[in-house]
Length: 352
Image (cartoon, rainbow, N blue to C red; front, side, top):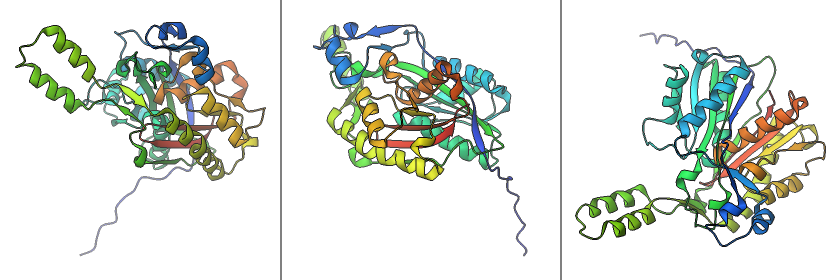
């Protein structure tokens, strides 16, 4: 019997980012506000992190709300209708439901149904992971256009009294539309993970622990206030081993960034912008020094008044750079995300 010849989708050679969008909350949390909860000072926070303020969303504004605002702006800037999307990817670790995904809800709101939609759980590397997957989907011919959103509401998963990470974090969303291009617009993605350091950044408790406490509390005859207090202490919140993360981010991520430049066939001198994950200003400055980034390259330092927004940080910082420096459009930008997992991703892109 002769095996029929399968048809395969025609491949595309090039892709690029067609448009960016962002959502920034108007709720500003200053260092003095933070010092109500931890024993610190505005001076110490500025010196150690470079953060002056961070943005946090109101209680009524959720992950999908922020993602929608950023996505609509990105679609508008790209000149693409949501009905043209071949996939919707949302990078987040703070969506409040295990299912349905934030991406599926977002696709429905935008009018992108029945486009495939899925979430990526890669924390601070999530946006670069999303760009890498979108690039592959478009070049493979699987999708004409792909929406990638990095969005976090980290204020939902922090204990304001915790000193290792809570004062760093903010909320926000950034989005990009990826589509076909006449010339190369997205370099090869260098990505990976180091699971041996999985506990360097993580949650204080598992959801199973919360469930078991909840079940036990149903038969507990103790005071309601005591139960409520114990329950709050079990709510999973973020914490980190700061020194481990700092050393890993500076020394190991500089190697990844160099690999991304080499894979794209360019050097630091060819860049117009450098947008690392907005984790800590000292990490950003150390990467600039380690990579020998020239003075003419504009460096994303959005963390100063936005805070660390995990998966949202790179698109937020990039959108801001383009707004403040329109001449960067068409130039090359090296972007690298790294964080919990420990996971990392980097690529060189042409700025829209």
